[in-house]
Image (cartoon, rainbow, N blue to C red; front, side):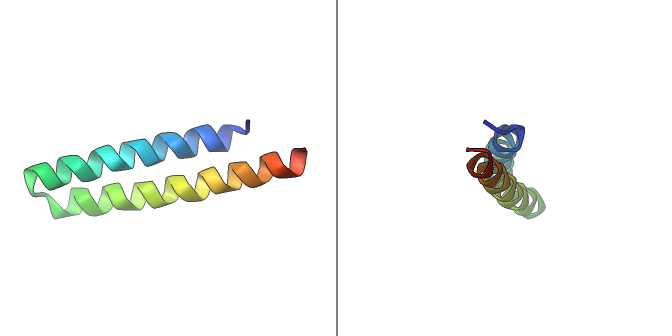
Length: 56
């Protein structure tokens, strides 16, 4: 498993937490930051998945 997949999954999780906290406290910027981090995590996870596919 490529390290990008692990880091990407972590970013997705942290983004989800930020988004939920932002929704809870009513902070729109925190919600957007969380969503942005989730998307970045998905992209990094996909890149790691592609690397794994190329290795095998």
